[in-house]
Image (cartoon, rainbow, N blue to C red; front, side):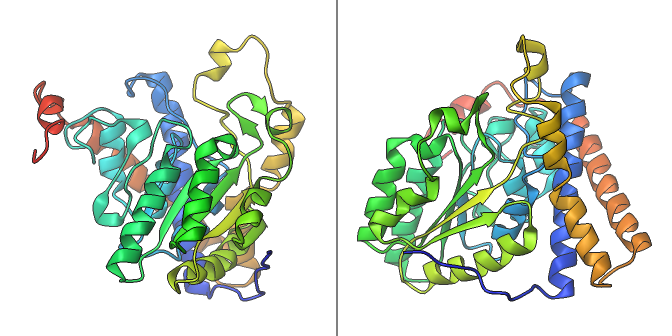
Amino acid sequence: MAASASNIQPDDGVLIEMYRRMLLIRKSEEQLFRDVKLGRTPGQVHLSDGQEAVAIGICSLLEDRDQITSTHRGHGHYLAKGCDVNAMFAEIYGKAEGICRGMGGSMHVADYSKGIVGANGIVGAGLGIATGAGLANQLEGEGRVAACFFGDGAANQGSLMECLNISSLWRLPVLFVCENNGYSEFSPSGTVTSGVISDRAKPFGIPVWNIDGNDVVDVWRTALEAVDHCRSGAGPAFVEARTYRYSGHFSAEAMVLSTPYRSDEEIEAWRARDPVARTRALIIGREAANDAECERMELEADAHVEGAVAFGEAGTAPCPGTANRLMRAGS
């Protein structure tokens, strides 16, 4: 079974808000890339610069009560859900003021108040968590949706088939979102993945959307249908969004790889389809805002990130006993 998005368009206010959040993600990721070189982060980071439209387009149709699970590349999903950028930077810097008290770091940002039940360093781990959240949502009967973001590499995990099966069988409100950025770590998808990823959902009777993940409007209007499908009680939905990550698999890969695995031409071809630039062009083309207003939004995003850096740097180191306490129930 296949589905196709309608031609409905977001109004100017929604489009501008999506652009603001995309800018915050992009500016945050660029800053974190610099932070690694400055030694502010205790280790490396996995960035999602270039994939902002997927996170924003999906999360703009979700509510705080709806859950999402993320990947090791989870900063964008965290910010797309409307979470605190200050707490995110403090967490990545390993500070007690972080969203997880400095215990999770870059790959494990979470915020239950916003429905983020966890980013995860284990490939495909969010699939089962989201399916479990979908079951809880169904039992509670309050119309909540659980969305699971995962990459093309995770699509080859057996757990995907298990979760597709049970979510279809029990008609769970789970939205599966594959961010297909063309690479599983350093391996081109074509060398490790057979067929079309979204086809995995079809034998289970799950509706499928294949979309341009660098077009925030395409993602938004697809999410409009897919989220409504899940929320209505009709069962799960599957979205495969084709996108690209500019910074590669992780921040220091250029220092550890003897030869590049992506050509400059390929990267530039994807940069020509940059989701942030395309959204800005659309806003100006629709006369929703002019160049000066878009520039002002960019400066506002810069200011938010600068404040987050200052907040994170001013934070305190976690108490050594915190990890032990947090491992125990009721802490």
